Amino acid sequence: MRVEDVRARQKLSPELRVPLVLIYADSLRSPEMRHEVPLVVPDPFLYAERDSSQHVVASSFELDRIKAVAPHLELLPYEEFGLDDLYAQGLSRDEIELEVILRAARRFGIEKAVVPATFPLEVADHLRANGIEVTADREHFVQRRRVKNEAELAGIRRAQHAAEAGMTAARDLLRSAERQNGTLMLEGEPLTCERIKVAVEQAFTANGAFADEFIVSHGSQTAVGHDMGSGPIAPDEPVCLDLFPRDRESGCFADMTRVFVVGEPSEELAEYHRLCREALEVSVAAVKPGVPGSELNRICSKVFEEHGYPTLLSKAPGEVLKDGFYHSLGHGVGLEVHEDPSLGRGPGELVAGDVIAVEPGLYRHGYGGCRLEDLVLVTDDGAEVLTDYPYDLAP
Image (cartoon, rainbow, N blue to C red; front, side, top):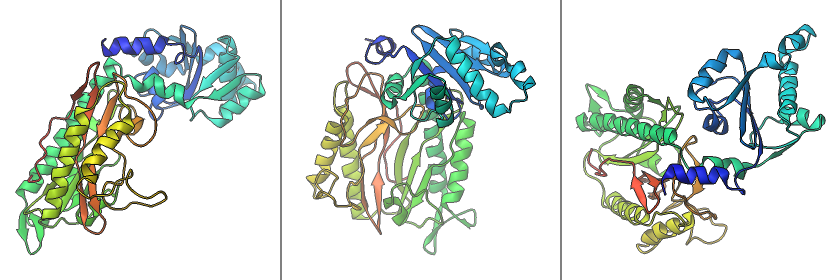
């Protein structure tokens, strides 16, 4: 079965298809809205779904743009719900916003609806006060987005291409640096994480992507989770690049990680790298629909535990793990950089159409660490690795 067929089946499945849906958000920050309206609309607007009918109520400023990318939606301007009369009554913009949402919900015959977990409390209170029941249903909206549609998959692939371009830009700077007095120098200046980040950002932009933040860390910073990295880079120490750019057109993310050493890696780091690559290979080989994310996490953890490294599965209950493999194996990637499914200790199985980041790592606080991360599409009978980049420690 093709991914798009699976998606269609999910959309129609009784347990996933709730007939009454409301979303009130902009599509820049809300993955739920961006999934339904695939372009950037920076101001909040209303999406309403009843049975097979899908409606959008928005400013006339945006309607032509929305129609061009989502012709199946019924589009209505705010004027349809008495916008001009409400202004004539002297109501504020905020009061008008609430009244238009209420009138639209009534027009569509919505008396009871599910909403995202991030649905505005003020809007929910206003609807409830006027007899419309709204219930946050996080799982429903998660499931709507699990199986990526063709536009989202294309966006993820573009974002991954941008991530690889950013990685190459960083690698080129590391290759060009020279060892001088215990630091790396490039064109007469110390090579810093900040300088590498500029080059990575330029590569993202040239490939139609952007990132609010990403990791370029070095030395002991590489053992500290999401330490974004800073300062001059020394020879022989690990340099971790964890890049998660967002495709401008689709709003979808990619996510990949590599570690480099300019000079000679220590035996400890070389061991981390070897085991991370082994764990990545066996974990990806086990990816297919129906496999629990926790099983992939177990497969990865077993590789590390067999070589004496602690993991979240081997630690004592209540222990806070700082060394070894102290995070989960990975997560889903799409309109959010971290979304379902989880590849950790919780429940849940993979489905065809999931895109997951698989990222085993080994660390020692105060020293550093290694993490290797690939992006993987779950297919009908296995997996397609979307990342196409070497793993070598040498840049």
